[in-house]
Length: 103
Figure 1 (cartoon, rainbow, N blue to C red):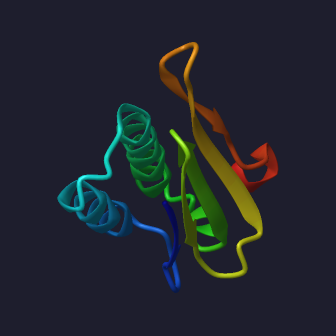
Figure 2 (figure 1 turned 180 degrees about the vertical axis):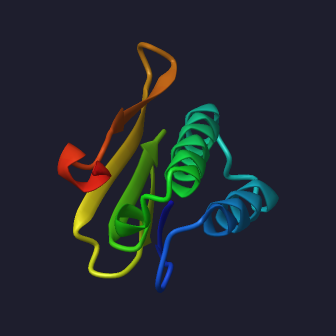
C-alpha cells in the first residue's frame, strides 16, 4: 500500500487521524503501521505544543512499515521526517528534522 496525502498548508493530527481511520476501515492496519502512526502522532502533537510551525508547514513525513508506505506533504516539504518500523526491535524508529529548525 502506498499513499501520498497532500496536507496543504500544514501537517496536523487531523490529517494523521483521518488516514489512520481510513487504513483501519480498509483492514490494512498492521502492528508496524500502528506503531508508526502512534509515534508520528506523538511527534506531531509535540511539534504543535512547542509551536514548531516552520516544521509542520514545510514537511515531508514518511511512515514505512510492513511493506506499506504513507507520505504526508505540506508547503515546500523542506524538512524530512522518517518514521519506520524495526522488525527486530518491534518498535517505531524516527529520523527527525535537523535541529536548526527548533530554535
